[in-house]
Image (cartoon, rainbow, N blue to C red):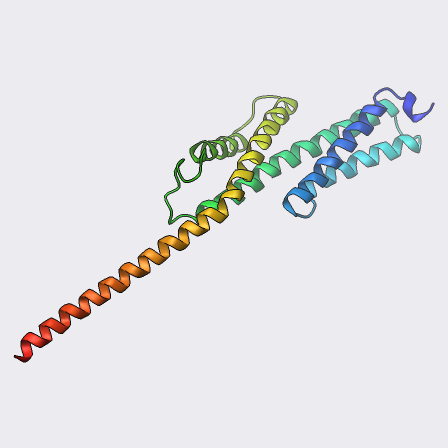
Length: 194
C-alpha cells in the first residue's frame, strides 16, 4: 500500500504544510524565532508520518494522530500570536501613555482597543466549545489583530512627531515660567533696594 492509498494521508500532508507555512509566516511577519509549542506539535506529527513510512502501527490511526498534531500546532500558533500582539499593543499604549489618543489622532483607535480587549478576554476565558471551534474563533481574532497591529505600527511616526511637539511646548512653557519668575524676582529686589 502506498502512502497516498492510506485514508487521510494527503490530508495529513496538507495539514502539516499549512501549519509549517503559518509558523514561517509568523517568523517572517514579526521577526521572531520559532514558537516551541507549535514546533513541538509539528515534530509529533512528523513522528506519526514517519511511523507510517516505516510501517509501524496502524496507518489510519497514525494519519489521524498526525492531523491532530498539525491542528494543535495551528491552535498553539494562533493563541500565541494573539498573546504576542497583545503584548505589542501594551507596549504601544505604554510608549504613548502621556498622549491622549483619540479617534481624531488615530482613526479607529477605540475599535482597536476593543479588538485587543475582546481577544485577550477570549484567550483568558474557559472554553466550553470544541478545540476546532476555539481554533476558528481564535483565527478570526488573529486576523482582526493583525489589521489592528498594522494600523498601530503605522501610527508610531505621527505619534512620535506629536510627542516631540508636546515636549517643545512644555519646554517653552517652562522657560516662560522661569523668565516670568526671574522678572518678578528682579522687580521685587529692585523695589527692596529703593
